[in-house]
Image 1: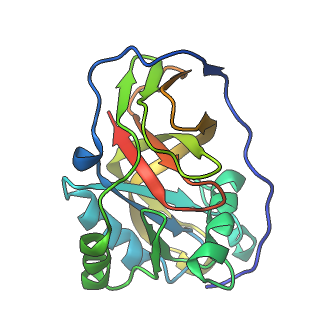
Image 2: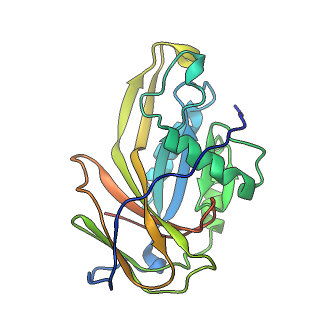
Length: 234
């Protein structure tokens, strides 16, 4: 399902200046490939892609993230995980991915490649083709993240904080296109915020305590829906 949308950029959190002090860094060669699924419980085409993300999430080299968008809520069912910030994130991706506009389901691999997500073999092939990360080492500590010094792209990069549920949850849908179905969801994103920027110098950011039951992921990404240069999760 496709729908053209335009959205504003997300807000930021407070950054702490200074050199990185943590020692447990995840280097680029150990960082996972990020697979983002843009989905909606109001979309009848989405369940097969949801199931494929659950399978991909089992891979140790993949960081799977499920973003529920909001633009199909008008069909009769409001996605219980949907947030405008996730809809906005997808819309920003589309021009650089060569897509005419947002659609569901859509899987994005490391911010570099896009597919519908129906074909598990196609997604695995895109993952295998994804180049090694070129960004900085990342360290996650209690209420703090450190980004190491490294070679930055021109114009710098955005640093994103993501909270997600690593478990699989079952959601009964009572209205809309999936009426009567119970849909499994895995690695559902519950929070997305831009911490600040990274320009190649070591930097540290203060972060809120991760809510119980959720995990934290950090993404260093070229602005405007560009490639993900570095990623780590706790």
